Amino acid sequence: MPALAIGTAFEMALAAQVSQVAGLEPPPLGLLLYAAHEDWQAYQLEIDAQRERFTGVKVQLLNSGPLGVLAPAAASGEAVNLLQGALAVTSPLKQNWKSWRVAAVLAASLLCVHIGARYVELNRLRKAEAALDAGIEAAFRVAMPGQMNAINARKRVEARVVQVRGSGGGGALLPALVAVASARNVSPTAIIQGFRFQNGSLELRLNAPDAASVDAIGQQLRAAGWQTELGGSASNDGYSGRLEIKKAGA
Image (cartoon, rainbow, N blue to C red; front, side, top):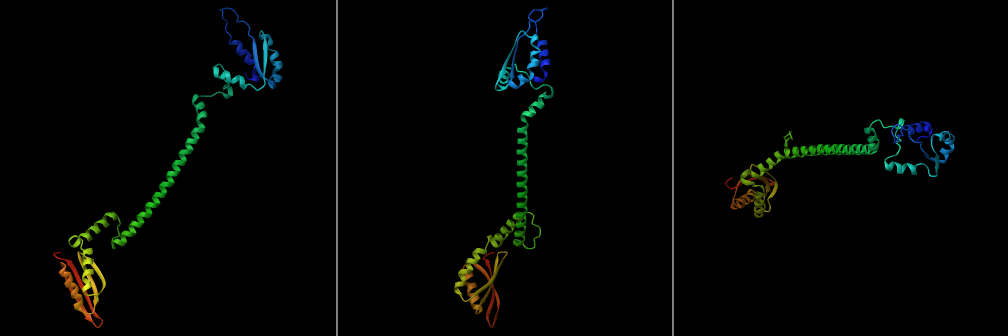
C-alpha cells in the first residue's frame, strides 16, 4: 500500500471484508505488514495507532526492499494495482502505446531512411538518364546530320543502317571494297584519294600516271562481275580519274 495513505488503505481493506454468516459482523483480521527499514522507522507510530483494529500486527522488515514481495504477488494475479490515481492509465490504447512507442519510433525512423535512400537513388537515376539522353542526341546528330529531332533516335538510326546496307541490291559496299582491293593489284601505281558510297554505287577518286592505269582497274572489276564507269582528266602531274562501281544488274 502507499505509505502516504496508510489510514485510508486500512479503511478500504476493512470495508471490503465480507462476513461468512449473514447478519453477523465479520471477525477482526490480523495484519502482516512488510516494510523496508526506512519506511518502518518513518511510519511506526502511525501503524501502532491502528493496532486496535486488528487481532494482531506482525511486521516483517525487508532487507532487500519490497521488490521480492511484489514480484511473486504480481505473478499470482492478486497484486495491488499500482497504476492508480495520477498513474492510472486513461485507456488501454494509451497503455499499449507506451509499450510499443519505442518500436514504433524505430520503425518510423527506418521507413524515413528507406524513403530517403530511394529518393536519392531516384534522383541519381534521373541524372544518369538525362546524361544518356544527351549522349544519344549528340551521337544521333553526328550519325544523321541535318536531323534536328532526336525522337526515336535508335529506331531511325537502325532504319538508316538497313537502308544503307540494303541499297544497291543487298549491301554492296564491303564486296565492292574487296573487289577494288583485288583489282588495284593490276595497277599498283594508281593511288586512291577517297571514295563515296551512295545508293549502292561506290565512287573512287584516283591519281594515276595515265588513264590506262585507271582503265586497267576498271577492266579487272568488270571481269569480276561489276559495272564500271570511268571519267577524269589528264594534267602535267598525271591523270585524275573517277571510277564508279556498281554490282552487275543493279
